[in-house]
Image 1 (tube, one colour):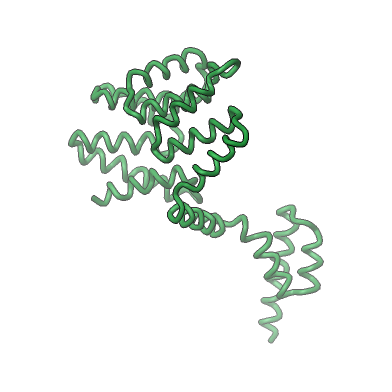
Image 2 (spheres, rainbow, N blue to C red):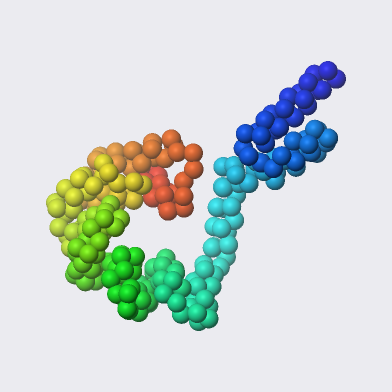
Length: 245
């Protein structure tokens, strides 16, 4: 019994200290004091768990299940928002969903429709349009849009713009130039996309050992990170699959 009582007191103290240091409402300390077991359990599930890695993983899993059961749910929701209010923000959001759904022609039309008045050369719109053109295989138009964006907004997403330029080179089969550009971009690029695409190009060109090293480096870096956003998990998944091939 003394051991159980000591353990219960230690758990109470732990959660009270956590509540104090985390900035949780002070009433949690009183609840934990008055209801040792129920108070600690309630505090964990209402204050600790929602911000934990486990909760993040659970939410991610739920989103994945919903997406699998209804892959066009977000697309329909954005389309309805545009139907109700055709603002630039709503059209941009719908264009992004169209890219995610690989409806590139529709995305291009939406981005182009946003280029009006003060938004004619908005960097976010030009960036989205360049991405959609590239994904649609319209490489010359994508390259021209990228150059326009870099000229008008030199400080806007420089790494992402550089990656788009490399992808245009790769799509034009200018492989030597693309490899050199990838190697120059990788040290500064935040995230795994550039290195994963570099590994895939190396693999495509038959440089299998170098490609495997690129994928293994992604996996090693991912292990050191406590949590990954969905976009980064996508590239880590590709790297894991290719490294095991």
